[in-house]
Amino acid sequence: MIALDRLTRVFQVGDQRVHALAGVSLEIEAGAYVSIMGPSGSGKSTLLHILGLLDRPTAGTYRLEGRDVTGLDDAAQAALRRDRIGFVFQFFHLVPHLTAAENVELPMTLAAQPPAERHERTDAALGAMGIADRARHRPDQLSGGQRQRVAIARATVMRPALLLADEPTGNLDRRSGTDVLQILERLNADGITLLIVTHDPEIGERARRRIRMVDGLVAEDRRRDDRRREAP
Amino acid sequence: MRARDAVHLAGRALARYPGRTTLVLLAMAMGVAAVVVLTALGEGARQYVRGEFASLGTHLVIVFPGRAETAGAAPAMFGGETPRDLTLEDALAIGRHPSVRHFAPVIVGAALASFGGLEREVPVLGSTAELLAVRRWHLASGRFLPPGDPRRDSGGCVIGAKVRREIFGAERAVGQWLRVGTSRCRVLGVLGSEGRSIGLDVQELVIVPVAAAQRLFNTPSLFRILIEARSRDAVAEVKRHALATVRDRHQGEEDVTVVTQDAVLATFDRVLQTLTLAVGGIAAISLGVAGILIMNVMLVSVSQRTPEIGLLKALGAPPGQIRRLFLLEALVLSAVGAILGLGVGLAANAGLRTLYPVLPLRTPPWALAAALGTALGTGMGFGALPARRAARLDPVDALAHR
Image (cartoon, rainbow over all chains, first blue to last red; front, side, top):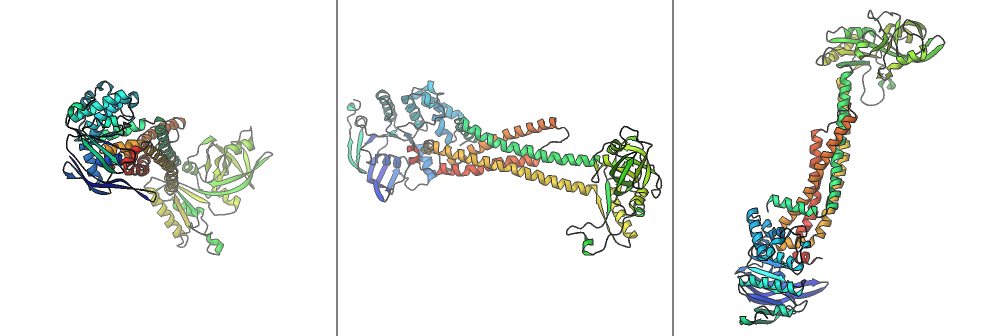
């Protein structure tokens, strides 16, 4: 699914060169449930951005579904983001002047899909998140948990292969946070590859594979096959 | 992305800031309305002048002595040839042509007019019976100069309304003997209040037979010959004939200038057309200002909606699509503003038409097209920079923007 080979990302801060990623090599198989943890500045967000094709590595290669995507141009990367990758953000990033349904519809609108099909899939996605009755609400009329569900519906409505979540519960109370995680895990159980970036160990420990990053390098990479201990 | 969806999204984004959007629409609408109304005024003035000329005795040809010089002082000042006099015989020769319906020789001067104890300096106009027809004047009372041989002084005269009021007062004027300069004439009629003619106020005039004026001012020279051609098509022929006649009679010298009403009208037309263009152009500047306002609003919008732009990128919108979305917002702003402005401008035209029915107010089609084109053009032009800025945002920075 994902193969990274000696990936580096260098930022120029003033006259200093900061290695956000200092040569990360990693393979993630399809259908995996991976958490990436680490202190701030460890490079976990940078890694997520590069995996999501929002940022480009300074060196190294990134293969997504067997294809080298490192050197693709902006338009080709945009198309991949649209069709194969879903994003869930800490601050939801819903468009404030669009309703929940219009927000979910947005990726399909950008992809110029016919309206009838868009509406059908939007209704289905909102129904699956249990918020079909909130379709006509604007984001500021929704609770945090509901907003994140709208965001997840939007991230998955194009049926991507990879779902990237950046602190998806960081802005939620404990209960809606757990709800959101369960939704993400259910999507993973249905086959989507799930990658969660978090600094909350309790959330990170739920993943079957837990990667710990320090100073732009993978410091720890643990896997668990014992499915009984998955949900504490 | 479907065009309908794009317009819908642009509309939703603009509706999010109603105050700001309204202000920009207002600026754009004012600019377009200004172009519509001001060009209508200019065009209305042009049509009005055309109409006045038409009612003023059409097909008019005016002959006056001396060649018109396009530059410099009169040739006489350089010791050149003084133009030969234009005489009554010249006028009679020109007037014999079949294409001439009416013609009237004119001499102008000033003299003292007196009756009883009252005396007044008046402009005196020497002419013939046909002057009335050529100038389309009306008489308030009495009759005009009698027809007959213009070389003979019939001894009558016609006075303007103001002369009648100031010299005769409450007394009846028609039939009285009026002293003009060194001679006397019997008042035949009083002119209605008509306005101005050849730079003279008709109400102040005393009109005498041309022979009397020649004697009074001791000159054979005419000031003008006014000719009315039989038809519009005959105007050119009359002009040719007048020039040829003068050349024949003045030993081959074409020392007169012939002006047709059409030429005067064409000059007015050009002046007013230019004025309309200039006024419209000034109004169009306000459209440019509205365009700058659009740019400002779009720049603010791009910076306020940076996270949204980051999101669109994350959702898979390529840079070109984002640029088009923002350009479309600018275009929607200018188009809606322009349509509002058209409505306001046309309504104002209709209002002015009812207030001033004499002015045929109508915005010329080219001005409508230019106003719309300029509005949309400035929207596109000034929307380009903000749209490009939005398209070039780095998605990671944009998403992190708070």
